[in-house]
Length: 509
Image (cartoon, rainbow, N blue to C red; front, side):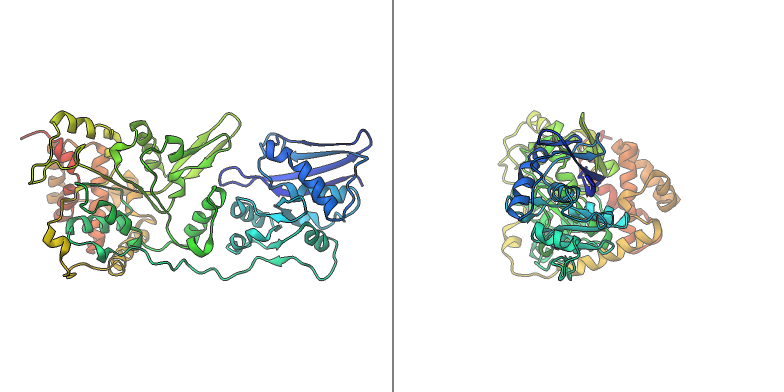
């Protein structure tokens, strides 16, 4: 038989579509042709496969015309992930391997010239899809730690092409090893909230943001502790569920940074891009769409320091994912959709020099300079930030004090945050920041006194409908932290207090 079919998986965002590697040997001028929209790395696989087969002791059919078809033909293929499948297809088509085992397996792996298997990206999405198709996945040993996370897929690893061929030929003992391991959550300690001196209001806002998944903007002079507070947020967030952890791992698996279970499993991602980052760096892109910072921060934290220093068009690309939790990257050849439900934490100075409002009078910025500086952040983006507060400069006595009374550690705060988040999940099945308008009517109903307070605030602050909804979501979180079944006027008043930039733009009365 001169025709063989081997199964593999492509990488298309978080999807891993099935690819049938069809190999046909025919009479004619000796030639190896790969068709099916292969990109450069795939076209080069014919040289890697030829050398790997020869150096592994197999006979390469040099006297035949070899056609390798990667189906479906209209799906672009990239990377060296198809090397192993192509090599096995050539061996089967030339009669050096039996065909009967191929239907139950899928193969991923890049080949060295000596036949060793090298790791590839995107193992987790491919493994999930292989398990759903009822097939086993064979891959390089370098990917065994990732494959061990797949509980519903039989994954086997091998160090060399010869190991895979021996297993498929039924030779004993088989060198394939099941990808089984006990995966423990990362244990490296996170920065603790007890390190923060003073800043009671900012600590409270950080707890509220963690409990409801709300976005937070801190405005304050240099050295007031904005970055320090932001770095303590991951330590008070509720732990990831197993499904969320697997989703985070799958995103890291398809990215250039890869995924190390020993360091990252079960831990919320934290991304802190520099203010020189481009829009593509934030949302993702490229000829082969790759995830950007907002997707790498999915189920975690995206911290943007010096927010006005980012380009305004770059910041505005955050508006849609903040609302929808997803981003779609469209290119001429393909389209990829990535999840992007991140928690935005941002920090900025009150003016270009940073000292506006300080008692020492160090600020020399004019009103026009301050307005131009703040105008770098568009109104629609500010509307989408739930909590906005000033973080004042700390007195030296507070900064140097050794008294830690009132400075709760992260573990205590996380207990309250987790309890409030659990109430939200039981009530609506989602955190408060994801509540839709119709769900706000159900879960954020106001008594007459609270409703009157909200009406007055809307008129005085001239809040948009979006901002009003965010005020209600934050008030619902404050009630959950207490806990209280109803939103009371004090919850609404505190929620309105976290709209400092709206208050600054309110009309004088």
